[in-house]
Length: 306
Image (cartoon, rainbow, N blue to C red; front, side, top):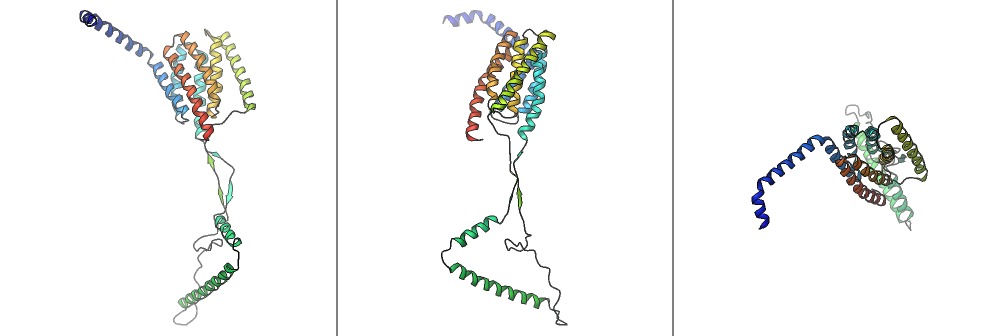
């Protein structure tokens, strides 16, 4: 009752306060709509990444274009350069994921299966009954063939002169199957294709990527520290280098790229909090949670081979 009484006395003040708060939210959205759009697109991107859906790449292109502007206004130049890299790798990843991998071709005969079955039937016969039956069938076929040839000759005989006419053109017969109307097929080249599948990183590739990671991190830190006004060159270079390697590994569907995303997203959360980019900070918290989900989902793909 006291609460209701207080509201009845101060309803005008409450209405004014809610109106002001609503207008402030609208004003903030109008100033940060690009960043909000990029955050939402980023969530969709990671969801598609977990599902191994190729549409993640066009979504990634759009997201990267948006964040080019966001990081430019926030003076995070290494992150801005990273988005340009994302644009390029998204196109490459789109191609790699959609490409059919051509496996080693093999030659198969269409009649090989039936021939092998016939051989097994003949070799598995214990007596001479099959041979006797085969001879009888052979004689019957020969008799039928002779009668057919006689009828053809009679049909082609000239009714005026009684002389035989020109023979009909023989219908092509498959010498392997004995069926008319078929040309002999020597063999069919069978080419099997498959799409890029989830794989584990090899020890050699891991060493190479670790060296590249160290080189990229050092180079970016040096450039940011010496030639830009970046307030956080070390953090910026750390996140950027991890993201570069992780994105390349994603394009190749390497399972361990999720570990790199977990490290990069954790560091990015701290960085964006200190820079006041709160919608992006929330986005990277979601990224971090989804990275663990992606780790589990891709591990399942490794087990099932899907």
